Image (cartoon, rainbow, N blue to C red; front, side, top):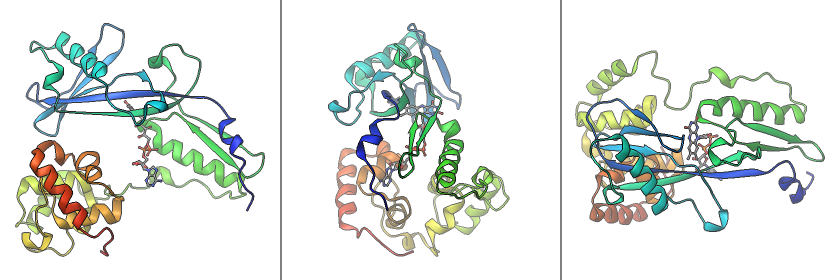
Amino acid sequence: MQALDATRIAAPGRVRLVRGSHIVLPALYQGDHAYILQNDDRRIVFVIPYEGRFTLVGTTDVLHDPADGPPRCTPEEAAYLCRAVSRAFRRGIAPADVVWRYSGVRPLQDDGADNPSAVTRDYVLKLDRDGPPLLSVFGGKITTYRRLAEDAAGQLCAAQGNRAPAWTAGAVLPGGDLGGFGAAAFLQQAAQRYAFLDPALLRRLFRCYGGELDRVLGAARRREDLGQDLGGGITERELEWMRREEWVREPEDALCRHTKRGLHMTPAELDRFAALFRRQPAAMAE
Ligand SMILES: Cc1cc2nc3c(=O)[nH]c(=O)nc-3n(C[C@H](O)[C@H](O)[C@H](O)COP(=O)(O)OP(=O)(O)OC[C@H]3O[C@@H](n4cnc5c(N)ncnc54)[C@H](O)[C@@H]3O)c2cc1C
């Protein structure tokens, strides 16, 4: 195998790192509807019902300097989002109302735009064939990530002489196979199979794992078969699944990134979860 020249990685183009932060507030309104607010800086801010008891507000567009470390929602960004909400809702919102905040970085192709909001969100793939094939990916969206992935794999396969046709466009994602049932019918049947589970817990598990529900719950026939509740309704069995199938490594992977159960827990419950998490063995067989 040929060694990869590290300078090639920097060569294909420049990336603009644009941070987007979100805040979570106690529910601002009742109902399932979302709002898109036109902000006074020509940007839009979305307001979405979140996790039953909360409202999610986002995002910002701020150039991110990697030297500042991992992305965090700064006080300025939280204040900006609170102002946007306060402008549109009767109830004023202040940063003190924020119950959680999180942030991500968009690795966009640098198209020379002055304004971080205006940098293109389209994806660009650049294949360097000067040596072992090196594919650089810029940008991307949730709405195009499958197309992007297929395109990227296709280019790399072709560069290796593999001309097999792309096949992923119609492939079902993990959890997406409900055996031909709609979500409501699937859940109704699951409620019969798992009558020992609290309906709210079953609904949450279904929302997290979809058609993988039976694998997550395994052969459980009684609530005790799932092990103890580690906090927020996450059982030992569910945590085993997350570790084995979803590569959860830290308590916050389970509580914040995936299930969002952390939002519903007190600081003492979070501490207890973290302690139990560290006690449970990392790898388990199904
Ligand atoms: C702030 C922000 C706002 C956005 N807003 C929008 C929007 O409004 N609309 C839209 O369409 N798109 C939006 N996007 C873009 C969208 O989120 C991404 O394009 C999309 O998530 C890319 O999907 P992916 O599966 O390719 O990668 P990711 O969603 O990044 O998934 C990659 C996964 O791999 C994991 N991973 C990485 N390295 C390793 C490793 N070595 N071992 C194990 N796991 C690893 C990561 O933890 C992650 O879970 C936004 C992005 C950001 C950051």
